[in-house]
Image (cartoon, rainbow, N blue to C red):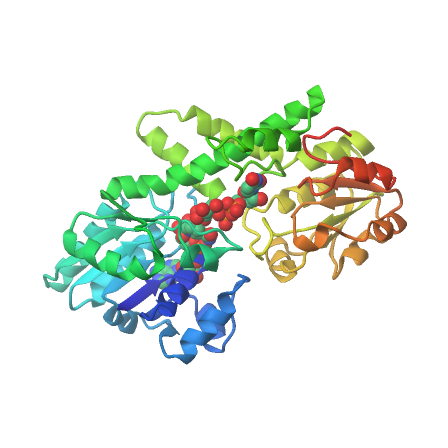
Length: 441
Ligand code: NAD
Ligand code: UGA
């Protein structure tokens, strides 16, 4: 099938690459010339495991191309995916300007029937707005061309995006016309393996499903983060509690890890946007407001522990910080807890030496030059002469580090672990003062 993907970011690039892998002919469009140039020179603008290989293979096969040429991209695809950003507006609502601009471009250049597929995360009612935007442009052109609008939210996780896209749990399609559903089913059949994973529903339900999924996952995390604080007070171990409840299939084992609060480009903005939708409809979404405020507090949990240990004034202290990306296997720094932690430490006069296995360039780009912050090239460089190690992102290379080396490099053997990577008893036996999340010590 011929597919155009508008927006070549995390979602657009991964979607375009995976669709081309199944034999479709895909054109990925972006307004960011730098991004398209990198892709056309054989590079990949983001770190995502497995993506480079799949892009390279399909570009070589002539099934995948990248362009900034809007008329060409619109002419290409029968299916026009919109995967542009929907960042939070000042009031927390999803900013739809990029989605509507993309829709208008489609309307401006289309000459035959198109299925316009909203893949971006958008509030209920956006499909109707997209339809209206396209109709207006067609009316300005004085033409009457049929088109469909479909909602097909994306559920991939960064760091596992290719795997999630190639082997989805479910594919949600919101639509109100049969022709579009038929095309969507044909497009996605190769991804379904042995089960029908296509869930067809009305447009508002599909749009709502995406927010409901992210809000539920964010709620689980904030719930566990709040319990981790209580666990510390009452002398329980949140890791034992996590296993104890996760083994109940009604609860399940995923997304129960207490940590430094959820970050990334989606949970924070989608929780905000859903709260805003509630407000617009005269509802106060109390659970989600609590989820958000618990998360804001949790991003500072390591700083609270550091202050409890050393006092408010951290002048003269240096902290080794391991892990800057908001989660492992990505270089994405959007809403990363590390940024809040670094700012809070610097504000108290501390120095921070930060290391991340892949996000160094991106961290430099988004954090810029900060007085007292130094980006270093290795775990060891971060540690040398520091007062303590602060572990923020659970990269694999931090899971079994050289503890003797850490002990020798630090002024005192102190670790603040925001991801509960180590066994407290083992750390004690090695002579570390070990402070983790929701655990005794
Ligand atoms: P992103 O910022 O990485 O990419 C968006 C791209 O769209 C950018 O490259 C931008 O230049 C481009 N763009 C903006 N306006 C354009 C236009 N008019 N024409 C062509 N290109 C245009 O964003 P992302 O992380 O891929 O997220 C995209 C959407 O998908 C958001 O709504 C997000 O909530 C949702 N989503 C993201 C993820 C994720 O893991 N990142 C997962 C599921 C859903
Ligand atoms: C999340 C969802 O998992 C995807 O299904 C969704 O498509 C995506 O948002 C989106 O809409 O963009 P992502 O943000 O890439 O994906 O990463 P997650 O693995 O969900 O992690 C989000 C944050 O939650 C991270 O900061 C992570 O450290 C934190 N987290 C996750 C926890 O603190 N505890 C957990 O148990 C799980």
